[in-house]
Image (cartoon, rainbow over all chains, first blue to last red; front, side, top):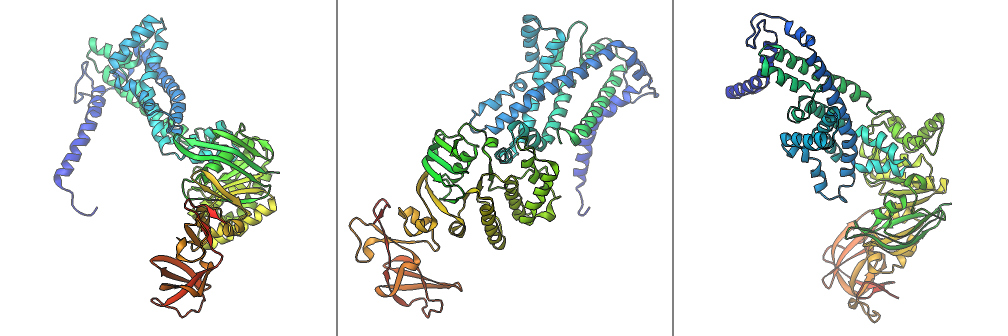
Length: 262
Length: 331
């Protein structure tokens, strides 16, 4: 390092880091506390609250549901979102400009409103079972991320490359998988991660759509906090973070290296 | 056999005209150069023939078969793009092999490898086969993009300024190479360029486009010596044809507004006095920049001329071309 940094700048940077890291440190600390109530700094260290999670079937069950929802809704959103993003970019000149805005709408509508209307129309109105209604809701809230992020990757893709392949005798579908997709791979992975995190952390939409027997982890945490004040909440949160990071690492590793590439 | 026939082909992009009512027959084995400024419809013509665009009206036939409803893959054409359009995630080898891995062709693996090597050697990129396509110089990328079209040995090549970003030496090498390849394969080639020398040396036919319309089509010699309009006359020849008011010299036919004088069609030592502005010694030729009654005139003169700026020289037209007020040729 050459030149001297202003001490104020260093202080500011440190403050930002503390602001970002603080909640994580507090949650992790509280989850290890050997007390029957949430406290920080932890008093004594124990892993007993982590064991407790697995003794409570509600946490086990909702954790599985949450991961199912996140995985399925993300895959569904990509299945819809990648072709949509492709069409929006490929035919940008021919299509009206408001069409791409359409895919952002679910983000603009307050999630509470979205959840409530889905409850009224899909679950109560159409009689769709809880699991599927929840899946529809989650797909709807993660779809904008899938479309926007894949769109951003496609926006910098030179479609003349695709045209070159097609003019050289490659069929359109093969061209899409061997020429277009490998070049927007990073965008697809980023969309997957964003959509997955959005789904697994969702409260507002899930709050309305969860029902008897089927709930997601954040809703279960909410329900638990309303009744108890023990460090289980903190340990569940830590577990959720660890699992999320693990999924991201796996996605990055597997999709990042071999995804659709031949 | 790959004769290409366009009949009344029109393509518009919204309100803009791509090409308008183009009728054109490219004989089998011809090397056709399309000339015209940016926006004249050269690239659109290639894209329509390749199948990347569909015409609004008219018929396109390759080898006697109407191809309007065929996909690009079914047309057996290969297009070379001006901006290379290489597959960035692949090596040079895979870029070249990709067209051969088409399910329609079913080329065996060792045949693909042999073909790729052969083409790479012709284009002097054999040593770069294992490079990523993005790790090449502009000239190398352009050669890979030409190679990608060559590997397939199609009936028809469509090339959009394929030599534009090469240096002079490589350009003249590849010019000869392309001409040889085309003659060997007996393939038909449509070629877009701005380069005069490419047009004159490679083409068997030149098509001149003006705002989407084909204004003249014929052998380069005919286009050069017998242009149908002032516009066509201005497209070939370097230095460009001198376009002067017809009344500047005696003997203009009735209705002539402009006299077109190729630099080599100006006799010196007789006629109107002109002042020398600048003398350019190019080695094999010497260009004389003159002003005649306030009009700039460029002509050629003796390589060892003694003329210098400020001198006066008398000039008179030889084999002039006359054009009317609308730019059409008067014969």
